[in-house]
Image 1 (cartoon, rainbow, N blue to C red):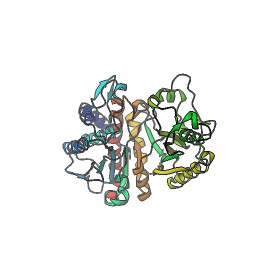
Image 2 (tube, one colour):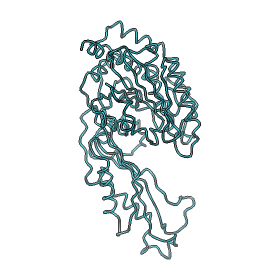
Image 3 (spheres, one colour):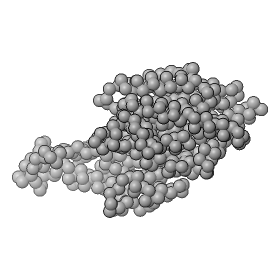
Image 4 (cartoon, one colour):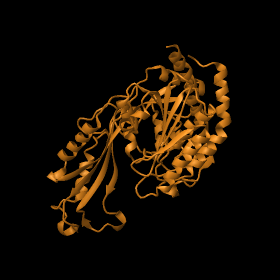
Length: 459
């Protein structure tokens, strides 16, 4: 049931008028260094959860709880009832952030929110405090009385991991009766193009260790017959890719991407590739990002170059991270990675393999009344039809949600455009894109409330 034009324009005006408050609220959250990683203080994480809960209350939520988790970060849970007979919509985002990293690479301090050229800079401005603020802004747009029942879950364990990803299994009451879920932790293919993320790659990771000597030995006296642990490890890691740069782990495959393309020039600019550095792999950029496996070495323990002695290295280890397409079982992928490592160990050297992570990817169904309602909302908010893309990153919670509640329609959306630089220095959010994303979410809730609420009342 299309929304009346007067409703669309009224909500458009309402969201536009809210943007100064949105920017202020988001800036306040960005200023809280809510890094939920080992070795970081729990105080900012808990302070951010309390601030999010207070923002929900100020937007009209009466029933707000802070649910303790396995670590210091509680889940902020709120329930805002809609009219009798209206559907229930789950709104999800997370308030924890990555560490700020090397501050010398930031143009402004990571936890000092700064406006420049229409973007708000700061760690978490995009990932994912923009999603948190979007849900709160949508509630504000309805003056705290939404046209559907809202069940809001804002967690603090997404970046490092924790028990929340198992909530669809362990807290089933939070998802029972939900018609649609808005996962606001993604973004458009580029600013101004409304985008659904309809597939998420999974991830498996492991730590590989090579030990060859009891201790370091002089490279002149022993180099040659004595295997250098780091050289053994390097030869092993090199087998994870073929000569063209494709992942080469037997048993892990994918398929060409059929959604929106990712232009090579745009990818090079966003990725920050240096001049003359080629792209690798045998397929187009979108396929390698969304629907094919990829493998990276994300950590390496070995002597520092600055202090390295002229000696054979006795021990070295690396962390391997492999992204897997939706539909590939993560446990099977981890087994395949272990088989590869053990069967490709050079010279017959014994190699240790320690699993570190295994999370399935997600293929999101795109049929159903809620998805159609969000498509209409996107078209009104952006002035053009939406497109679909994949996401290279994994959100384990989404995979678990669809596994446990396959009838829930899931919408992966957000304002994190490619220039947002999430997890990197100078993270930012494009404020006009954020406004359009908030408007789309608001129009979706209004549309769904009228569409399914009327159907329920007539049943």
